[in-house]
Image (cartoon, rainbow, N blue to C red; front, side, top):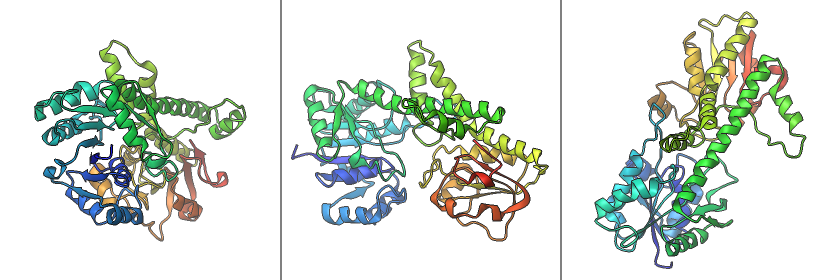
Length: 423
């Protein structure tokens, strides 16, 4: 294990923290096609905010960690980790293109006896049935004879400063028993809470995808309850507080389900299940319900405005937050855009204020303008607290509202005495 040299391919929310951590024990290089991303990391800054600048600079200066866009720089390494996105297309079908491209990259640099480990979330079978054949074809090497593979699903929670990468218990697996042991040892060497070695790559792949699918189904149940109790004029959060007094009740809150994991990963298992003739009804229903919650929030706000006699047409509306979760700049698959688009059918006077999000990135990704600074001398007909950033707790929201206005709280974050409704 002392001769292990690690190359991490893909330097996003998963790849960079992992590469930085491995560099404390092994010679490590990071690879990404995005030159701007590579340059910013090499300069000591991470715009995803997953790695603090002080820690990143320390790692660069004391452990020799570096990143590159040059594939030739990877040829001296022997332990390749793939941490690229696994998105879905507009029809929610798995898009394996980034994973296939990364496998081609590995195929160009991998040598005899080297190992490639995949971290990207996939349905069971992708590593061995989709990725490895690409590596074989490009490299001319034979799997489990000339090179070996493993799968260790990522468990990064964007914005979470408690469950950081070194504290996460990782699932590991390998294509042979010996390689499984070696991969497990490599990961164990940098993890505080160790690993769980799965008996096969497919088991490891399946374990990851059900982690997020389980949360998706549970949140969908809470969202369905919220719809029921809102219709009955019962506060959902009060119901949850009462129910959670029982020792075995699992306490979750309703909400918007976005991001790159919970809102995407279940589609991978849904599609693969159908190939085997199984229709995953619960997972499919959960995805449909959760994907509709942005529109539901907007319509609930409109309903409250109508009840109070607030004219929806051309109303001035403030949306607080556009990232997919609090205290994090990640805007991937955010369902706040669904709130915006539903309201935008009635009014163009919508201001989205988010001190965390990159305005240029939001414009490029969603063609929506946002502001990082709350406009002064503005008053609003309605406001929606969509994301519970810490900064919003200091906001005197009531002072921004017109005398007859509506405040809707998606997160159960605001004082109850100032809101007109909440999810």
